[in-house]
Image 1 (spheres, rainbow, N blue to C red):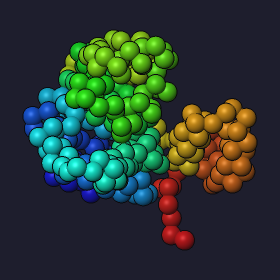
Image 2 (cartoon, rainbow, N blue to C red):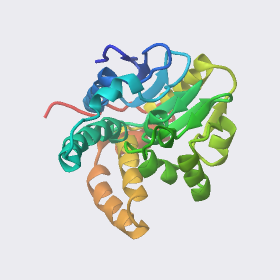
Image 3 (cartoon, one colour):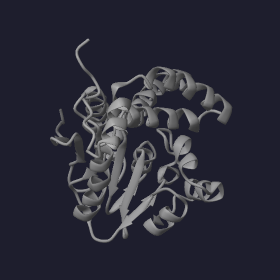
Length: 275
């Protein structure tokens, strides 16, 4: 299920661990761009997967885009309109790669250590939950290479944090900000002492707890939360009424209630079954 630089390990508990693994700092090249949507689209369709933890095996979460690799994408020529029309679909391809993380039907928990620069913030903004080591650092780095971030940071990052002024300042200065500041503005929800092993373990504790819940309820909660982010409260209330009119008929509801009354752990089936 994994690839050359993105590894996947699925445990019996329904928790899939996805790790970036391109030494030394997971700088994203063409291969990684291509692997991301394949990995997350497959995980999203796997009925055994209930939660994904996204981490790194290297000394940092990611240093962002491999500038040597991306240099090949820039077109030469005299007609800027034609160059733009060729380049625009490439941007959509990059966007869709990051979108696959957000579109994964199960929650994605990021476990960050080292630094997450540029593309790292794009990726993290597409995750559902973000944990970081106490010494982790972040940066929306794109203005330092002469461009506006175009694969998710400007679309998602301001909606994940609770301080619009900070989000704008971070985006236009490209300054490095600490894990402590990331927690203060709401970008990460937990700081973990130690290194990559400790933050991964902390993410796994949460992931394993989520994996014990009804997968129908968890997938539905993620879906409705994403709808809520981009719609008014009344629109979301109307939407979730329709959603639950269908989804509340799941056998998971009966199992959850019975297990509570019988004082036992619930047993929920996989997300998909034979039609």
